[in-house]
Amino acid sequence: MINRASLFDIALTAFAPLVWGSTYLVATQFLPADRPLTAAVLRCLPAGLAMLVVYWRLPDGFSLLRMVVLAILNIGLFQALLFVGAYRLPGGVAATLGAVQPLLVLFLAWPLLGVVPSLRGMLVASAGIAGVGLLVLTPAARLDDVGILASLGGAACMALGFVLTKRWAPPMPLMQFTAWQLTIGGLMLMPLALLTEPPLPSLTVLNLAGYAYLGVVGTGVAYALWFRGVHRLPAAAAASLGLLSPVSATVLGWLVLGQRLTIGQSVGVAVVLASVWLGQRQKM
Image 1 (cartoon, rainbow, N blue to C red):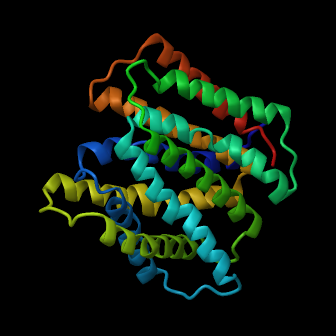
Image 2 (image 1 turned 135 degrees about the horizontal axis):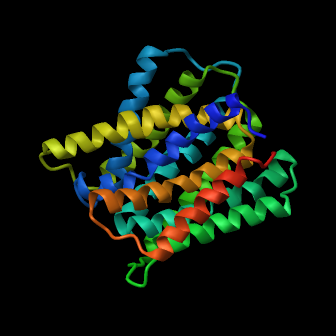
């Protein structure tokens, strides 16, 4: 039975993947094309620096090396791969590949957290992947090898960063931890973006709105709530909430871009939501 406090924690944590599902729409409709690393930097670094101004404090009681490792996995490498996948694949395909994350969390938690994955947990995670596949994959889906590898790599980074954050439990306030993660991750990405991508063109109002939305809502607020959920919820329960991202991406495509929902996609929505609901009853 899930009590009221747990429902509140679940709802706040679910906000992050629901917002992250909009990344595919915003990246393709609002941002300048072919600049995935630049988009990742502008999403993370300004938000991290702004948060540091308010919550400034040098990290203490926590290994700098561990902080850097988590920033690479949770922010730097993950955001870069996320945007590469978003630019090179249809949002639904990228979201489907990212849906392997809950299953990866189960297997990584075995050696790193000492928790043997249950058969029920693996079935729930697998059902979630199948539901996402029904939700977003169509015969017309465009596949790109680089985009596929980027999306799978991003899911692996997020899963490992998730489990290591759970294992190391950084002893610092939530907002301070979030600010340092975003700042370090953004600083790591900036040289790569400057060296490998062309300068930004003159930005339109839509471009600025897209970057502002991703930075404030999709990064600052979303990551703070996500890291809060990582600490408060069982790992399997929090990881299963990541399946809400492709649901959000598909619904936004329907509402904003006028994409039709088929019977198979409707079944996929039901399967994904059932998997998320069952996932909240996993203990790890």
